[in-house]
Length: 232
Ligand SMILES: Nc1ncnc2c1ncn2[C@@H]1O[C@H](COP(=O)(O)OP(=O)(O)O)[C@@H](O)[C@H]1O
Ligand SMILES: Nc1ccn([C@@H]2O[C@H](COP(=O)(O)OP(=O)(O)O)[C@@H](O)[C@H]2O)c(=O)n1
Image (cartoon, rainbow, N blue to C red; front, side, top):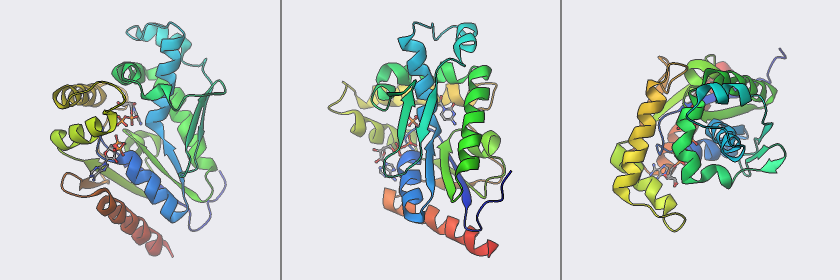
């Protein structure tokens, strides 16, 4: 493997839904000149492909057999991240409630995780200036040697309020239903056998419940800068 540039830093940001992973990761990457990878978007993309190709998302065997078929490509510019499936822009369709409700089942299939993990590692290895990678198992499984690992948390109430604020106007939603769906997805993601949502032993935990997004961004930027300074 090639030696990374001295300032190149690999940052893993994990945590459950609505803790601020995507917003924080994008902003930190943009501020520090790093690439950005949303691994949840990749699991959503493969789920969308399964749905549109008539694969039963409750059938792990059918998912495993089809897992290698879609061609998923992630663009890693934090100012304009992209995701395509077989050359088609998937950024809109992967955010529907149908995909959200099925993604945990698809992403629990070991063959799916093996393929997507390989893709994630190759993207991180080719980001010469460094990258922020966000997801559920980045610090534990995908990039266990990351320079900095962050685990974001927040109360279910705060996370549901943030999510329903986002959904309003797009699809019918209410706070209680959003909270219930979110807790159900957390339980599925934390309880699966292969590479569950988990905090790495050496991750820094940041509870974002009472913090503004700007405060979280500043906190992570400071932690990255400290890591960089310690290496020079
Ligand atoms: N600390 C925060 N305070 C208030 N709102 C936040 C905070 N962090 C993120 N948000 C908002 O919450 C929503 C979900 O954030 P997002 O970054 O998508 O979370 P995740 O990637 O962990 O699911 C977004 O609308 C975002 O702007
Ligand atoms: N590294 C990752 C990232 C996401 N996922 C799965 O993908 C789903 C969607 O992730 P996401 O990050 O887009 O979800 P939100 O938190 O943004 O709603 C999660 O609920 C997990 O089932 C995963 O298994 N491993």
